[in-house]
Each structure stands twice: as structure tokens, then as C-alpha cells.
Length: 258
Image (tube, rainbow, N blue to C red):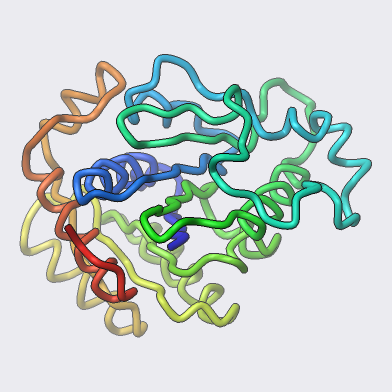
């Protein structure tokens, strides 16, 4: 399964991705996390790595090289690409969790991130997973990746919603765009939920737009305490709730939970 995790900037996408990756590994799956967010650079720390992987952008000659190849079918020469075929500098692995990064905006006046969107789309399209593998994609904030077709080859979309109304509005747009692409598995997960009252209000608001909430992750002090050191807590409310969210996703996509 290839799962896209998307939402408004600051909604906690990277934290949700990392919690789900941890839960999937505990369930016996091999996990590939794809960092497709060209601006946020802290995902590798949440996953327990000391440094980020060398960007896949370097495989195609950097941003300039990719711009020259855009529109051609040989951006990535392989017809399909398995995890085992990704060169070690571009794939970091630890405790059954792998991490690849498409690329980052590194300096001012660098130009748009369109080439990274193209590479994300082509990589995810060619990525071939084994039955015991999950790919979890940390998408860029907002909705532009839908315009670039990055999500076209994915199986499921998980929209991260936090309490502010702006997040709900972005979630509605993501649901509309994902459904418009023919993606049948589109759900929301509520994140940083401070109370059951807020959870009910969010669920009701989203249900009014036909958006199904698959679970919630509470505003867990343990997550914030661990984030000060760049990591995740080993246990706690958020960890248990992420396990429940993953269980729902696996059940609804016909995959076996451990």
C-alpha cells in the first residue's frame, strides 16, 4: 500500500507519518517513508536518524538535470523500482524503517519546486512494493501536489486535520481533489485534539462534507516533550491512537494487521 499523508502546513503531518511508520513496523511490516515535502527538513529526526538521506534529486543530476529531463519518460530509467534497488546513500534504514527524500529547497531565489513534484510523481509511480511493505508519503503542505499529479499512483489518502477552521477548509479541498482523481480511500485523521468536545465538533463538521474521520490523535504532552529533542515518545496516548488509526487503514484496505 502507498499511503499519502497530507494537510495544512503545521497540522502535524510529519509527526503523524512517523507515528504511523512506528506502528506499522510494530505490526510486522517493512516501512518506506518518502519525504516529499520540499520545505520541512525535520522528518529524519522524528524517525530516529542522525542525518537525512542524500536526496533522490541527485540521482537525476540535481534540479538543473531534472529540469532538462522534464516531459521525458526516462526521468527514472527503471520500468519499476523496488526498495532494494535504491542506492544506499539515498536510502537510510533503521529497525525496519527506510527513509528516502525527494529533495529540499536549500537557498533563496532557487526557483519553484515543480521539478521535485515531477520526481515525486515518477518515483511513486514506479515504486513497486512487496506484500509486507508499506510506503508512507509525507506530502508537501497544501494541495499543489494534486495539481502535479503526485498522488495519482497512490492507494490511499490520509488528511491530517487540526482544530483551527483553516485546517478543516484545506481538508475539504484535499478531499475534493483526491476524490476527483478517482482515489477511493480518502479519510481524515484528527490531530492535536485537546478534548472530546472538540473531537465531536470536528467530526461533525467534516461529516457534513462527506469526509470520514478514521481516528484521532490527542494533544499528547509526551509528543511535545520528545519533539524538543527531535524525536517521538516510545509510548503514550498518541502512540496508542496512531496504532488504532493504522489498524483501521489496514482493515479498510484489506491488509493484514499483526
